[in-house]
Length: 150
Length: 126
Ligand code: HEM
Image (tube, rainbow over all chains, first blue to last red; front, side):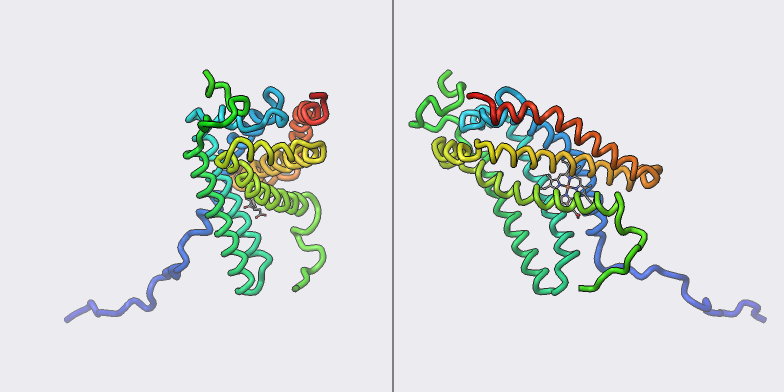
């Protein structure tokens, strides 16, 4: 005599419906906060060195940029700042487009323009930082950083 | 456009206006950054090209614009830290309003340090 009957579980245990959209928005939310903290340091340092030290904006010219970017320290600083600020800013503007552009077509067009601007700016900026020549041959010496004549 | 009902929990007051200001400053900084990368890229063209374009920026009107831009960045930066604190610090939501006044206080202090120096560089002799 069998006392054990094979009764199927009355209903399947609760399973959360698997989301099909991934966790992109969560990561982007975390990224906005994490990149923000790093950007405070990068941007404030940038503004202090370029606008407060010495003669500030008045002193910015080719020689000033040449002097800064002959140092790997400032190349890396500016590269990191470029990438983080562009990803942070682009992601922020993406949120704003999603908030206000109600028609699919409008949203698509605006976001395509946004990603195009992102790509052009990041590629151009990265190339400039790394292919920059602080002492271009044939340029008048008085326009160049002091390291070029030393 | 659907219109929101009047007087919901989140409308008006410090919370909404700091959000509006964070949004406006964020977009403004973003568009400035696009132009800023373009003008800096002129160092790759020639010293003369870069100096010519940067020279057109070194005017009193642009100097005032830079002051406004720095104020926008400083507000966005401090208020961004406030947003992160509201989200991650257990007491953040309770102190969100106080923290906004701290943000505005830090903005005033930072600008008080920056403006005299900057305005002297912009308007001072040679
Ligand atoms: C200086 C340090 C910065 C900090 C601490 C910071 C912080 C933040 C935070 C925490 C958010 C998220 C707001 C939210 O999810 O509700 C945000 C949004 C945003 N940020 Fe920044 N940010 C900084 C710099 C920048 C820069 C350089 C740009 C421009 C390139 C920028 C553009 C934006 C934009 C467009 C948004 C979206 C605003 C919105 O959704 O209302 N931020 N920022």
